[in-house]
Image (cartoon, rainbow, N blue to C red; front, side):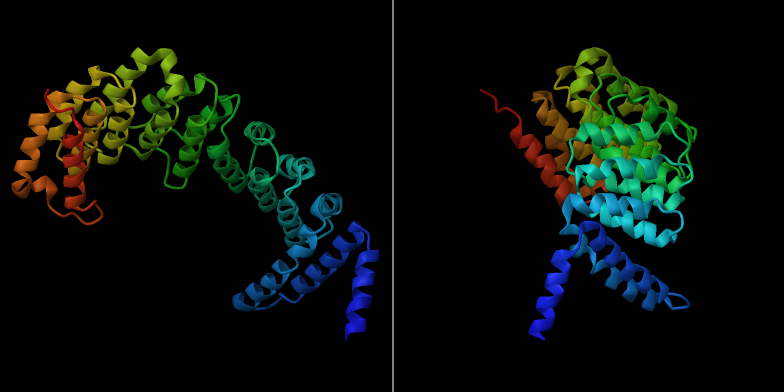
Length: 348
């Protein structure tokens, strides 16, 4: 047995990286062939056996990139084999994988599932964000299959773009009231704008806020992205502050949106926001009230002391603080309001 292991090790050591990859994929294709006419459980078990082969590929590092790229691009192989090749390619994390992944994503003749896998693999490479952004942002200019578009936008929601027109186009293409299936794509595009570096990304987000329906999930996504774009809004701070105030008013009947708007408004650290936030202490949603209390505390608005004390004194009889399934516990909200009050400057 020991002699056999030694012989196997010697043979393995004598393999070139290409031969090692081909040997592994001969096994992959044999396991795939066994999946024919099998039930879902058997297929999953065979897939696990394929996954167990990954360490052999990872051990090759960048030397596996060229042979894996060849398998991924080989139209004569099964789609599933090519998918495994792309998956293994991503696991190498090697910078040299970027070009083959880009080719798979950009090529209209590549099966849609493979294009989606390529998009999903790009962010994990050991490369600077700029290179990854470049490939994925340029992909937005192409006709992408739905899954590839979803994976591309999802990846960009963490990377952003250096040129943001493609993100705006994608956010707008489903209209002002996207379907439930389209809504996540809009959310990813908004989030991508939120982490994009150009100052223009903030203005784009305000245009999108105007475009989408009032009290919609899309407006919520945009408000959250605008909070991430706080620094870029300093370039037009007075205008942005006014926009945030208008947003809070327009979204007052949608608690999640109102909370995001209040948080954005407070982030300007401008005492001019205090009067509106004080008005929202009367909002019918207790979570909105707690958020506005914290916003007022951040602004050190002493004029909030009396209304906050009144809320706390009357909380037992205030229907807004009754337990509601799916909402924060009333005691948690009361605690937040109390901490906000306590943090306000004490009288000299």
